[in-house]
Image (cartoon, rainbow, N blue to C red; front, side, top):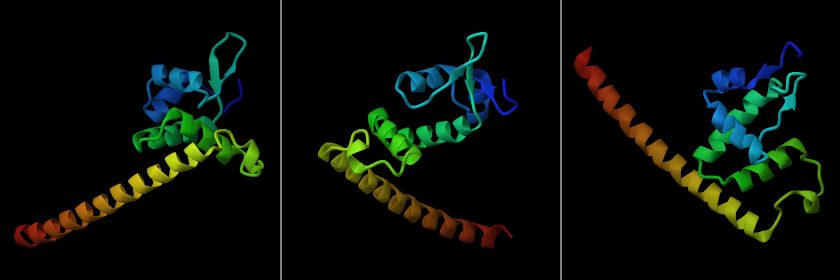
Length: 128
């Protein structure tokens, strides 16, 4: 095993994602592992960032199918458009909808943050 390699338990601890979910990501084609001589799953250092991205996309409402397409495009940005997995009009519509949803949430979170900051300033002035 290479010094930067890790087993599934290590990846789970570093990403705070259960081993069960990591196996599910593998089954969905979102995460890939090698097998060592004992048959254990082995992941490279890049798996940490990949798992974090998968979690963020899932939390943002993306389907595993869309995530698979996004990850493939991110890994192979120079592939011709016709070779991009899932490059269909439906995918484009789904991605546009997701972007719109994310922008609405960002706007809402920005308003909430600004309101909380205002309240915090008022409270700090009284407490200090």
